[in-house]
Length: 387
Image (cartoon, rainbow, N blue to C red; front, top):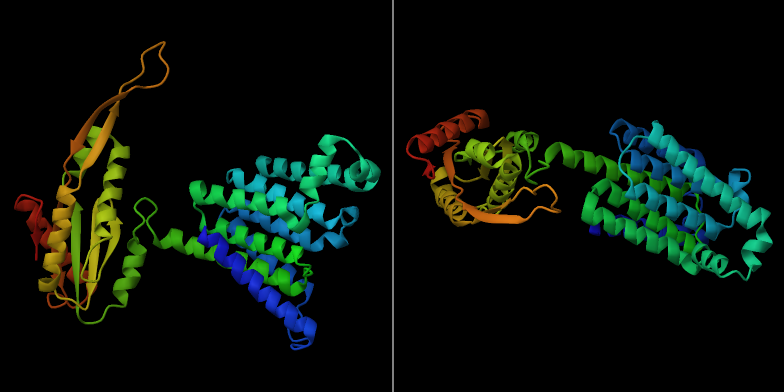
């Protein structure tokens, strides 16, 4: 949730401060930004989203742009601002609860048609059938009015909070969190009566753009399964090491047997468990997932004599950490759900090998020597540390 709240707070505070200072004449015209710059920033964010298949963010950017330009769009300008804000929130919620299906696709076309149909109905209600919408004693119409015309955008903000909660629990997408935070910020400043200027929308689109870039960075550098930094992060980290450091290689013993006997899902759970333990390494060590069942731990500014005890602690912790799998009985014909079967406890062990910068003159050489030390641990019976 903090990935949604933080951009929202930054956006609201910055825009409010600039608006108040500008309105009071303290900043003059120094912060005036042309709407064309806002459009350019929207196009930039939209293009990046398309490039990296962020269709949901793309649709939200289009909704934000639609909101910004609504006073220039025939018929749409006739829709009252509160109802239009509710329309934005409803469709933002709709986009968030759907999957990434592309913008220029059948699914994207379906979303576009649904949005346009809502606009048509909203225009008919609030403009063509204005008396019916605003004055009808019908209970259902009264509920619709209460939702769409709520003070301080209560209904849109509630919808946004539901969408943010869904993202936090299910999608866990940082870029979606950022754009939800920015959209929430737009709702708040709209409720405060701050106009959507070129400055406001440029800030919104650029914050969205930054959120997408940060998410792409995370995907590139963080291993999705274990949550540890990956090989690319390792390469960049070791490139910045100074003359004194240690590198340890760690390998899960008999990992192939886990996969062959219990399936790849169980193998993935083993990797997650080991990664969780490795993330607790002491002595300033930084763990990485190198690939497969191999992990690397780098100790900057430490020689291997210092790191040996920390590696031994990791080995012992892995050995005593229980890993329980539950076998589910296959359902027989005519039965409903599968019944829980017997539980089985598996023993996981780790072999490690370490070398330091005294052994090699660069990280590639040191890592090769650490891999040799790991091989010695394997050959000596596994479940041990060799330095």
